[in-house]
Image (cartoon, rainbow, N blue to C red; front, side, top):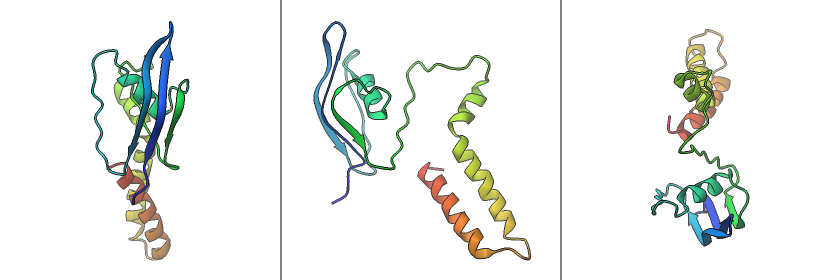
Length: 137
């Protein structure tokens, strides 16, 4: 049986003045699962996602991703730096991927060198391709 990539057990969230947003939520996701969160306005969808992403840490119960899993969260109303262009802000979000792609291009070019260490290049290529694959690149 496959290990869960994320588990949540009996999560509850109360906000002032004693308004219960979430009550005893338990769920688990397998790798590759496609998940949708549906509900009325104010039902707690965004709160649930903030807890899952680790942004909101003030709740009862347990919420934990599988070790090594990264969870991204894009708020509905993100706080953007007014001094940056939209392109600069987006590039910040994909910086690691962009660097991996640039380095992979360098590795491909290095294969053409007469004294290239093909074993080292192949190992680095595999590592970089895995990073890009994990990011759906």
